[in-house]
Length: 215
Image (cartoon, rainbow, N blue to C red):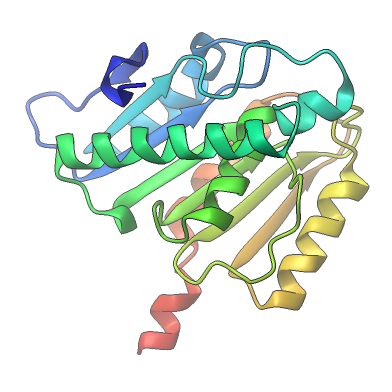
C-alpha cells in the first residue's frame, strides 16, 4: 500500500507551513468523518497544525467487543496495520517536514488500540498519543521513552471496560511511562466533547517527562 494513496480528510492551516501534525484514527466500523469534530477542535487550538484523518487504517469492521477494542482479528493483522500506519505517518511527516516530536496521534476505540500498539512498536514516531476508549491487545514490555501517552475513557464504557484501561495505566506506571489517565463519569464508549476538551488541555499543559529529565 502506498501511504499517500490513503483517502484522507485534511484540515490544513491557512497560508502557513504546518509546524505540528495530528493524525486521527476512527473506530472499527466507523469512518473518518466520525473524527471531524475532534479534528476541528484540535485545528482551532493549534492553528499552525495540519490535522489528517485517514480512512480505513483501523480495519473495515469488528463483529465482537474484543475485536472492536483491538480493531483486528489476530496478532498478524495488528502487526500489518501497525506497519501501514507507521508508513503513513512517516510519509506525512516528510510531506510537511514535521518532526516526529511535533507529531501527535489520536484514536478512538479500535483506532486508539492501534495507536497504542504503534507506540510500542515504534517509540517516538509520534511525540504524543491520545487514546479515547481504547486499550492494549498486548501489554508493552517496556515504557516508550519518546512518546507521552494520554488515556481518556468513559466510566461506563461497555465496549472497552474502564477496568481494562485502568490495568493498562497501572502497567504503564510500573514501567515508568510518561502517561496520564482521565476518566469521565456517566460516559460510555463515545468520543464526547468533555473528553476532547480534556485532551486539548493535556496537550497544552503537560510538559513531557523527557523534557524535565533533560533539564
